[in-house]
Length: 141
Image 1 (spheres, rainbow, N blue to C red):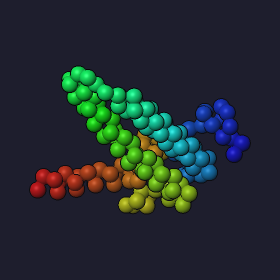
Image 2 (cartoon, rainbow, N blue to C red; image 1 turned 90 degrees about the horizontal axis):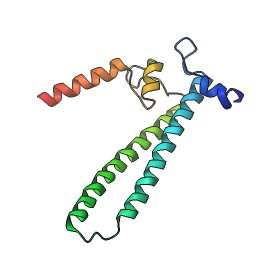
Image 3 (cartoon, one colour; image 1 turned 45 degrees about the vertical axis):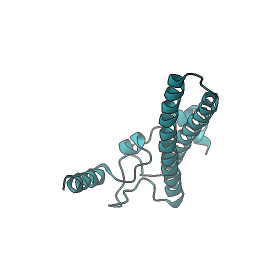
Image 4 (cartoon, rainbow, N blue to C red; image 1 turned 120 degrees about the horizontal axis):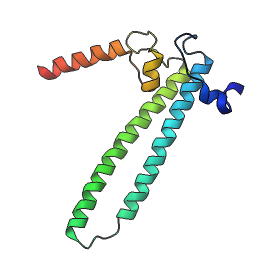
């Protein structure tokens, strides 16, 4: 893991020219996922702190209503964050099992560009588009 330290890791970007999901790519995506998870957990801690600070009594009815609205929005955001953490954990599990980066539908590699943009992706762009088309058809019926 010597390549992972310092500037070497920060300068590294996976490319389509190297063997797909080689050790360096796997470690790169592991660090990317772990960093993303830590960022979300930090945001969750800040939200909890904010909610605790907001929990004080608001003598004014409008202030109280506004605070309740803010609280509902923050709780929805926390629920989305919780679901995202579950997806990140699932991606980390796939990394351990060796199935990370491969489309669940076709078994083909998911493009590096797609994984860079959405490291929790489980479908290739083509499979995702087919999935979304099917959803649209069923929704329109």
